Image (cartoon, rainbow, N blue to C red; front, side, top):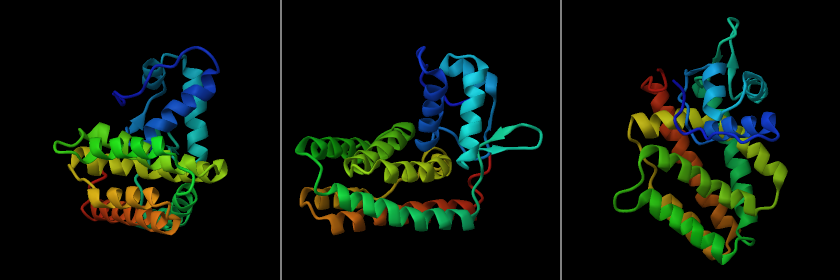
Length: 224
């Protein structure tokens, strides 16, 4: 079985659209580390033939989002502490930069949308795990896209391809959540158009995620 949250793909530029859909699922944490992906099952879920799915998985392997094993199995990698630390350091630099750039560019409508996402994530009842992951992704990338730096956003996306799966384990299986105050601090900085404060607030979320995932590895949580 594969993720139940993949969307079916309409006819069109199938190869790219299948790639984008599986990429989205990885970034949003729809797959857990160690999960084996099969071409047939993925193709059925997105409603295409096997060829676009095979092409998408090969592309994602070149981005270090998937591992191609000698037996031709395709697996979501289990990250080592060293790799997680490297990803954390790069995320701190890139995502803080993106947030700082976005602070002076976000419209009132953007800020209102972010507030709604934040409330849905951390409200009185909070979101179910899969919704929480998707909303967390949208919260961050609504900010990063506002920076109007497409190369920067693409680099950040590549890192999220790798941290999405272990975050799936922490959020979905182990019922972990991030401190809502981190998100409120981001919102406050963006409303004040304070780029430095926005960068620091986003960095606090990155560090909290790193602590969560590193703790999971110490407890051997990402294994399936």
